[in-house]
Length: 205
Image (cartoon, rainbow, N blue to C red; front, side):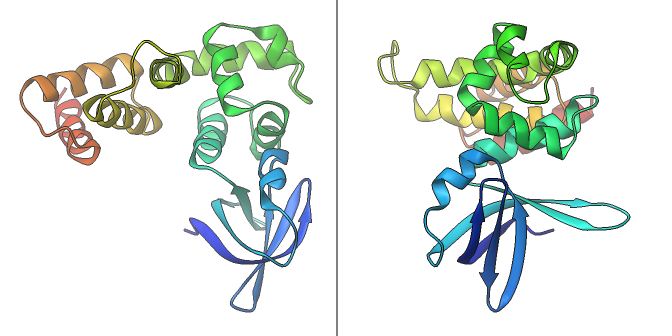
């Protein structure tokens, strides 16, 4: 698995980039949001990647941030009918934060404005992702400047653990319940410890 590339940017286009890593050129398909952050060719860049293995090719998709890659993976793995091409289109048409907010609010009209996403696809995205992205948006709102109060280190660790469990396929409610019980029982407020404990708890039913 290739998880990131670090090297010299040799080609930069709105939909793809080429990166020279130790003399080997890697082509990665990217959303416009990542293209905007790459800058001029010739500079050293780091791009987070997702490797898609097909029968006829191994295709790399690149992202500037963890949030972009996480959302891309969530879309292609959890939403029926959404493949890598549409995943990139969604990231190109809307920021991660706006996407989360629109899913949480059930705003079909806003999602339908993204190129390639019709009304039925927007409705399916909302139906299949609302439970998973809602908690992430709530945490970001709580910790955002101007919010009621900044998130504590314990809250951040708990939210990171719940997000990790959600990305592993668990529902928001069961992930939150498991993490809360672990913290109430005195498990250290460290995301990795909480994830391990929650996985043991959830596997036992």
